[in-house]
Image (tube, rainbow over all chains, first blue to last red):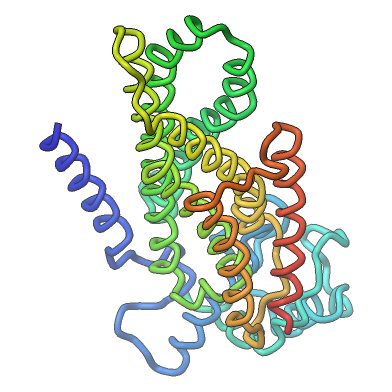
Length: 125
Length: 236
């Protein structure tokens, strides 16, 4: 009985270690982030990826190049579009919405992160 | 052709899928114990109850505790993977605050299963088996049964806000930004959850948890209270 439980314990520890401790590759090719590259632009893109994963994926696809369950694909969004959608609602003048609707809440608390978000959403593949 | 399931997000999703299955096994049995078994046992005659405790309860407890174990492990893997994939700053975002609040509740529940409910139920089963074989009951059996019930009711109470926050992580963005203050939120959550958990482990107050209706209402109330606390305190 003890051996079986010990084996089970070792399998659990190995599972957690294997999958969570690994240096996972970026989940999307959109980031352009590589391990060890910490120049200011890379740091900004990395920060934007964190902001995106923590706030946007409730509606948008974890891969911003793909359409989400509620929101459309957002890869390539301009700074102007991000400011309009996050801070004021509505769209920049002349912009044709991919999926029009008033469902998106405002995110005024993310104003300091818009530059990072823009960098992530426009990073070279 | 590259299959989505073999991408990093696909592996993450496999853990989420397993997390759902193990979670259903765990919480399904928790609700069975609390909503179905406890009220039924209260109405059963001694022989029927004894038979059930010897033959049904051990099987249900096996699925219950191992469901809890693998829900916890798959949840822990996902929690660490998401930080590894997206940067550890993700724990200080809307997703992070929601998932960490849900995880705190779920971790207390997991510990209650393995360190309180299962050890206490082993005593109850051993005592019932002894009596069925004509031996005296174990003197600590009554207290163990009461402790198991209180911890199980506490887990039912916690499960309602736990599921709210777990779901909110991916479906309800909160107003969490770089200006948000997490210290006070952490302190208040630690005090509120710590007090309820202390009662489950050392105390004896059942209060509204005594009845099925009471524990459901208390769970909904706790979910609303914790949600409001989180919404307000991250903006302080």
